[in-house]
Image 1: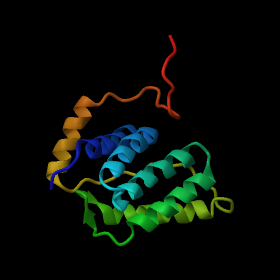
Image 2 (image 1 turned 180 degrees about the vertical axis):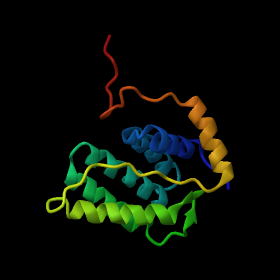
Image 3 (image 1 turned 90 degrees about the vertical axis):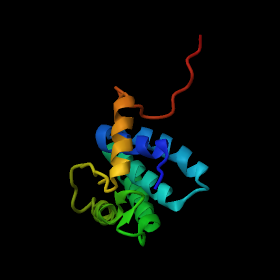
Image 4 (image 1 turned 90 degrees about the horizontal axis):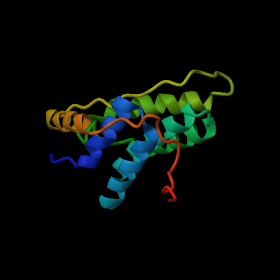
Amino acid sequence: MKYEPLYAAFLVYFNRDRDFFECHEVLEELWLAQNKDPRYKGLLQVAVGLYHFRNSNVPGGLKMMQSAYSKLYGYPAEELGIHMGKLIREVKVYAEKLANYHKEPFAYYDLTIEIVDPELERLAAKASDQIKPNVPQRRGPQRPVKL
């Protein structure tokens, strides 16, 4: 399978940098270019869900995780070069925990998207060499600097 560079960048921002705002930026561009493919929308929503919960927005995190699960559920265990089945299970658990957060609070934790296709692994490694981490990470869209 041929993978788009934006998809590889998404995986770098997700797995290496945990930069979920940037995940949204690059995957939204790919999602639009791919005729709003629900697989990309679901992956995007996982990143946004983690972004919200990490920033103490439990309702936003829950909404995104539930939506991500509903979009990704039913895809094969290995899809888009990743272990989709594992991710789907982890998103379901995260959503369930967030739904009960008021009764049983828990600390934020990251998810990792496991790459199973060696071709995608090579592409992501190459992208990782080329992508400089955003330090500090952006917390929202940035306006152009006025001169």
